Amino acid sequence: MSAITLEQAERIIDAIIERGAALDCRPLSVIVVEPGCKVKAFKKEDGSSMIRFEMAYGKAYAALALGRSSKLVHQRAEERPIFMRYLIAASGEQIFPEGGGMLIRDAGGEVIGAVGVTGDAEDRDEELAAFGIRAAGLKTDEDCAGMGRRVGLFRTAPPAARSSPRRRKPS
Image 1 (cartoon, rainbow, N blue to C red):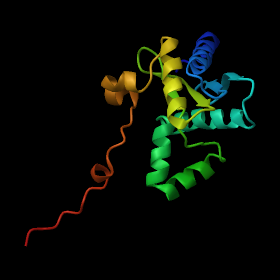
Image 2: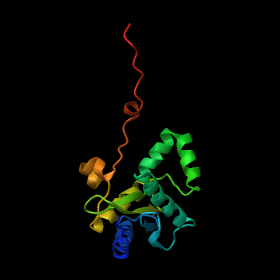
Image 3: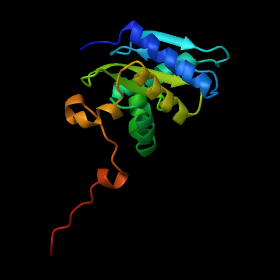
């Protein structure tokens, strides 16, 4: 398993902060972690509020721990709150199920790290995470969708598709 380089991590962070400024976002905090959730790089813009490191880290941790974007983790938390409460507790409260955390993949679809963005609205944080990954010449899950199962992509099916109704035996 390869890991993201410091140069790639810095390109992701700088692209996100630059784009956030161009979009007039609130002050951002951005973290890039390696597989295993070891911090590779972090920046916090002037004016960012307290515990932004922990929030950004929690989003990246959620993406790595569950193999999907933290926005999908948030959806899962809404659909199955008891299950997610258990996972959050099992992680030592490190999972933060809020959009802005994404897996970072190389050209072959291998996960080489994750990014966590916090500071603006959830959807904007998520958009900026994808922007930064692509700006560094790397790939998001969406970019690897055609690679399917071999890269371990998860899909969130509509609730009706997940819970198959019990079939009744014909009388």
